[in-house]
Length: 315
Length: 275
Image (cartoon, rainbow over all chains, first blue to last red; front, side, top):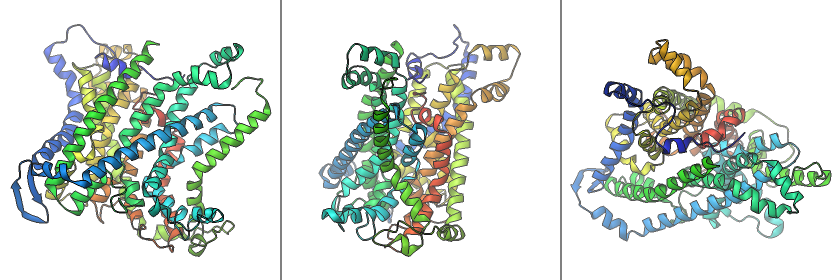
């Protein structure tokens, strides 16, 4: 039986497995020992660098000019506030994430519904369907750009020729739409997998009862199936958006952030400032801003996530 | 939908619709395979070549050329980091599931928050550190970074599998005087073999396909498979078959692993939440 487990709920309640009433001091230390290596490792490689990022963000420092290291106060942040590029990047990140998640959830729901009905060759369909998610993103983007969308040799411009659209440089004409398309192609299978698990957890007898009571297919989908898979949709959308916000590989391969700033999102802007401009102070300030924005979104997202699991557990 | 009365006709209709949708999604992968089996003139022809005698020439070309070192670097970075995630993650998951420490929830929250911290948070200091320790273009830097990326996921996932083991089993072992190391190796590991498989699969997918750190922290010696593909960006029509062959080879390990372990995939992707 596939179902959303109460794992997160149990952790939210602060207990899991066995817990003895009184744990001696020595014992409670012994219990912590197995945790320490992983804890210290993550602490060293994520938290301490983050503190350093905050520190660097108050300095003006360009790696191409080693002697340029000097305290700059809030200069980097002041520059960001007036920087057109950051505003564009934030906007592009929002557009890309919202578009990709919305479209891939809708398509994922549709494909999952198809795979949950009595179609022929379900197993093979599912297997082929998850391929776009498993293909290396760099490879997928390259195949799209060069063999499918290239104006001279690509398949799509050739197929579109009879419609008067042929030989259009789709990637350059519609850069954001191209990135969204390739990312939707990649994330729809992810959504489909999670939503399908939700659909398969539903009891077919309830649907049958609704049918006997005279509900048509649309009604029973809206009133019975949709509420049931909603937590799965939310879970997929949340996890998916945490990944899509960080999109870098397909932008690098398809458009390189361009033309102009048209597809530059926050990760790509960071790359440009840090590794094209070697501007350490400015890149650190972008890092701090990105973290603050992520914390705002993630706090909201994680709260929703925990409540999803609690609703499930109460059933 | 799935009643006995659903006619064969509607079943056929939906099957056709379903297969059309699947075809659209799978087509880029199929096209990549087809292109990889063509000669360069066939791959860059217009109109596109549909009927052709398949050749493995481009695969031979890629494999006998400079691709293998990239592939081997990818394998080392993914396998070693996955191993480290298991070695570090299993005891931690144990401490959070079987004998929970105080504030278990806070610790779990800490781990997962680091997974979703944008790489912007630590990129600059990590880069400077790698530079000062002469770890730029060194596979060790990628191994450490991939372990960091995957460890939080591994801890959550392994914990979700450990929570399913009846606690009595451990009590019994402890009464028998089993040491901690024995408890882990002799009882825990065999019981959560599927969990270890799921964790390894997810770590493998994320580290094998990782691009941001790979492209910015390596240049030639330690460059991984996706970096090899970057060389094709400026390709102007003459390298499509080779590009497709390289893309096929670079994607193969994860594609095969994901197809074989489809069951573990969902659970892994949702950090153990969906079974």
